[in-house]
Image (tube, rainbow, N blue to C red):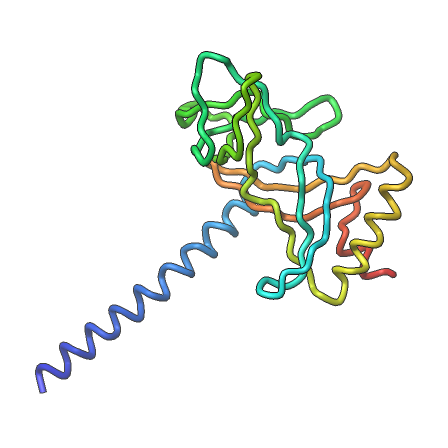
Length: 186
């Protein structure tokens, strides 16, 4: 009888541990959304279909290519820390990139180097490059983006919350209106 109680107790502890991990991940994401600093990253979205993940917009960022110091070796796949600022139009800009985590209170994100160039430039991969949407409105969103991109006077950007090096994609917007709202109206 005592062995059954011990086995049951171990089972309960294992179940609790398995539930703790996803709940902690969800909590961390929600904390970043609620208390993180918001940045607007200019984007060029494309909408592929991935049968395993559903409909989403793939985001390409204008800040993807960065000029770096020539005397530092940067390697593909390497984790780096990018310090963020905003430009005069309110869009996110990378002010510096480092292999060491910033120690001050600056806003920064953890990134991976996609590709290094000979001429002191690197390509970086942002951890928030897919915006998942309801399948019913994803195709409408793609058409809306194409219509707006023809006019070329529109601002398309990703609204991202940043806290302690982590980032969460909150929304994709065209002229300060959520692409979800625009697609739902059509």
